[in-house]
Length: 93
Image (cartoon, rainbow, N blue to C red):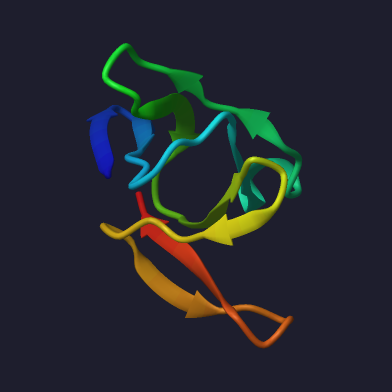
């Protein structure tokens, strides 16, 4: 799930991952920081989230890395093909 709140030339983007099964850790990787891992925080209800402040007027690609084992895209985001033959999530801010 994605939530965007724009303010001037920046946007607060909250990325929320809602697991369908027991998940211990979720990391997000995106082109806003050269695909470096960032850990999402776990809520009491089991969802994971992170809020990023990003410049507006760009398209950001990202993916979730679950339990250090598998990749998932955000169900609310569009998908764009990546250079590995798969797809990344993308959001235009």
